[in-house]
Length: 213
Image (cartoon, rainbow, N blue to C red):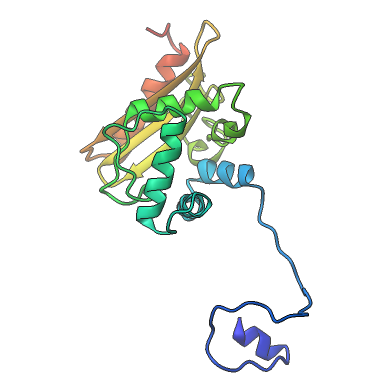
């Protein structure tokens, strides 16, 4: 930034430091981020780890916690409990899910999805609308291309680490019911096979290729 200012003819001296504008200063530019709903949708659709971590830190700041891993963990856990989402057995080590010490449970994920589908909680709706669509968008755009009739019927967030694969989202079953699901696999040695298995489990819920059990 200093280099750009210098190139523009603005004299820059000293090292960067936190400061407040001097009295009478004039605003030269204002920038606003995309709405929080759009950031949540982008995070989920594209598995954007950077935004996910930033959202956790912003939650911490909004709740008066420190903007670090520990503060984000406390703030997010508190908000989940307010939504009556079960947190037993879970450990939110970070916001992105890249920390291998992190743990979530199927109960946590499916309950959160159910809360997001609640008409009385419109503020949570981006959690559903941001989920990738099978065969069409985000991290599911290249999956469900096997001709089983499932593209477009499943919306789900993928999760991938070495030896860990997950899929959590929603489907509409043959009876027209909206179902929330979460399938988690650990210790997998063949990522492609693990993903295919998770995809098949979700597809079974739609009744594609046969009635769902």
